[in-house]
Image (cartoon, rainbow, N blue to C red):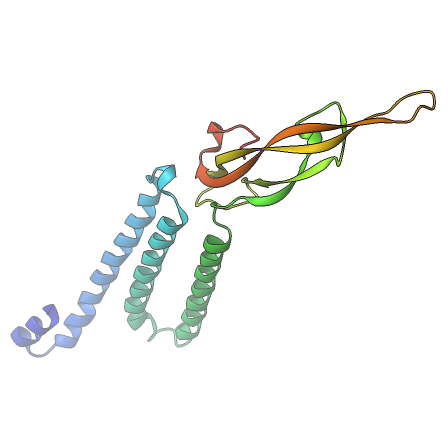
Length: 204
């Protein structure tokens, strides 16, 4: 609209006016991108979920590509091979976004993962068979949060009672003594991202 008005008023030289206006648009987009980047610093930790970060990242890419496209009109006349380099950058951005989406879908901190747990970590000083068990756990190997300031921790738990052989080694050639013991553990049933300082090591 601004370009049409200048063409009507000035007649000749309209093409020069178009070129003169484009850098201002690029500057405006650059300012917007800078503002988005700075706003991430002030987001509270609980707001830094994968959907939020991906949405901001997509907006950033769209604005960045628009800025790159507008400035390319001036640079292309000086650098004939700029188009090839720009194409490679676009491909890298596409692959990076695809990777981020895969991590957000498959590695989200939501459902606990089945993990091997050593009984001695919870009941030290005795020997049990089996000496490990399988429990569902949240933690750094169960899910990825949107920032390093958050950890994937247990939001909900349920108590489970498992039976083990408790083995006691006897001396003087006597056979080992064993009996059945019921041990209590906790299965994690739901995970959530939260600052790790609020939780014990068994929640992580």
